[in-house]
Image 1 (cartoon, rainbow, N blue to C red):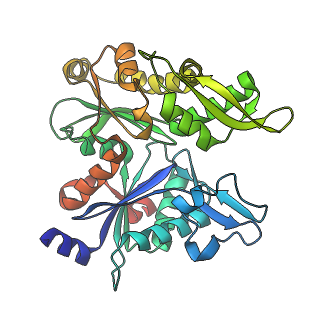
Image 2 (image 1 turned 90 degrees about the horizontal axis):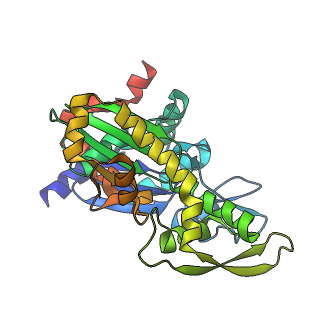
Length: 350
């Protein structure tokens, strides 16, 4: 109760601003919001529909089902903001929804960002969050948030490695003594996997499906390695030639074949990170291995796929999808300790 009370007074929030989903946690309460990073807008006005109601889950239900007057958009792509105005409006809606009812202070907000973000893209995050209602804005690299969130001893003089596979980006990093000693950030993740499935079905079955259907196929029968018992699933879409609705049976082997290229790209980032380690750090990782997290890491056999190709022990985090947010909340709770790992808008201006 005490933590909740002080959390309310201080009004502090951690935000995992993801390409696919946005997660918000409040100090003392944990996760309070998990919504798709999607908004529905009027094509002519460019404004979010219904006073902000068509955001998140409601907007995602509209994907592929809207009339010409409505457009469903994702304000982020590959982990960064692509539509400044829509991201600001989305964040404003999420901030209001995540905070308690009644009078409230503008929150201090800690937002996690990918390592591949450019200065211009970083400035867009600061501006969007400030204009959405944040009092102060701090940025934390996703890789460090993930490492902290899965419980790795990043401050100790020993190598700790994490691989966070999100919707738009993958972060692979090795930490020691509180800082990253080797890392790679690439703009490939769950979205790239889904697009690979869409492209494969277009070529192989002459069937056109949407990203949401591809994502469901990846979740249901997708895998990174051969399954003990291969399976198949019917998928519905439109025929490429005649544009008429039809279905096709897709096997788990086909989905795995479709995912080969994005998985190799992620594996390349992991290997490049390992190549950047000193022999002493590499020796630590032989025993300690790699922890994988993020929504994309839940692909069946992904941990074994990395283990087979790196020769290191690999384990999936207990709560892979919320690891980044958990790490950000830890930094908020002990703000003085972790402040040197954060970047503020003042730092950015400097």
